[in-house]
Length: 295
Image (cartoon, rainbow, N blue to C red; front, side):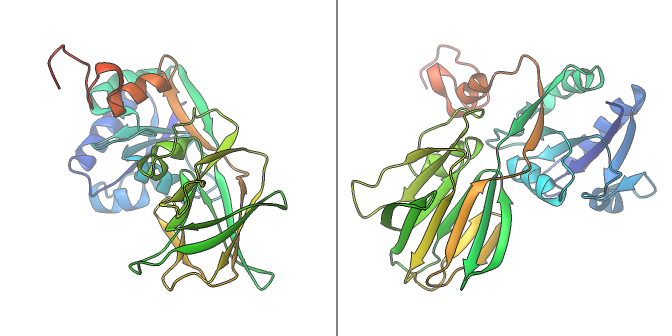
């Protein structure tokens, strides 16, 4: 891979400096480097640039920021899927699994073709109102039906492949991909799913029935959720980045997305190692290994 684009979250401290260092390393190794348009305009005027979503863009991306930055870059690609190497600039990132100290080795692997492309399942979401589709979008982590400040439950009638499943009376509903199982759903008491698992997770938020528990469904299933008398301020939100206001009798349809997210990861990188490091499993703490000290 010799044609590489750089995307950065400019709100992260040190993002532009890290982008400059990465560009220098890549060019020294003979790679062609382009800066995403906003990054170029603010910090690298005169450099070769491109806009996310253009058909003739780079063949791979280095994305500097956090998981939200990487998901935003994927969404802005439109119909052009480009493999991405996520570099974490702080915070709890699962998609951006490379720390700044690991960047030199990761770039060497990238240029030498030693990276593995891991395809991540996505979630297609649409809202139908009076038999018309009024919204559609794609989520990497999750689609959430939730309300604003009003302390009222939402009544949601769910069906799988046309068969009635249950009616949720809850503060909201999370439908998560395996990748998104470590995001909002995990905070709401949901299980962690292996990223390659061909499944989705349905997780009610604070259900008003002990019988309503998180449910794992096959990825081939189509889920329909019809809203019955939702409170004002109820939204469908994708990855916490895109929101659409919902009304009574709206039907939310969710299914496997047609376009997967493609992550570039080192060959030896283990997902379960990332879990241990990020979640502090087995005597490890966030960002480091257990040293034997009491935590």
